[in-house]
Image 1 (spheres, rainbow, N blue to C red):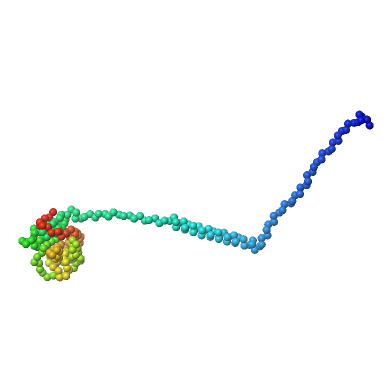
Image 2 (image 1 turned 60 degrees about the vertical axis):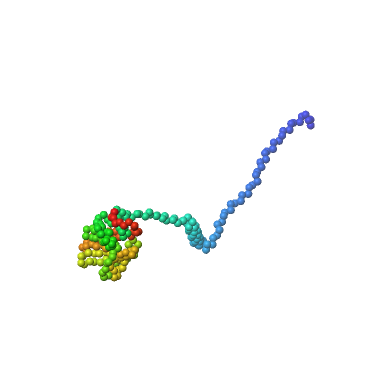
Length: 249
């Protein structure tokens, strides 16, 4: 064969090879099978759950109570009660504006209301300066004060009365009804039995009596006796003075 007369070779085209992917093996889905619950458990499950819930609630309640109690015991500090101190109120002195009588001859003094009248004609006593007398009057009431009494006598009497303190001296306050002049008498004595109705202080004998009509009303009697007691509360036995004097002030 003449090589020059050779036909050119036409390349032969091969059909494309299609690669088929290997078949994928699919696993059928597994259906989850529910566990078989024994009939006994199924029947008791609600009761068990309720019991568990109750136990849990009880535990929570106890824990909350204990924690709350502990918290309150720490926080609840008792508040001290404030002590209110009231300043003492000064009681007005009912005798503040009263007059003052002083007898330095026998060393005693007292105060008396302006509504009372004082008689001092016998305040220096007799020629021996004994049996000093001071008289206070208000309407039909009167107070008689004797000091350095000498030569008194008479029969002792038993009186009804009560303990009484006159300027630190323990004495008695007696009462008696006088039928001869219809008066009520209140006086001071150092004894309620076999007494002459007098008392001794500093070696000297004194007498203080107060009388008023028995026809005074209860209000009048109470008011006049109150003033008498206030006068007695101002009574003082003074220190001995070198210059005797007796002057109402």
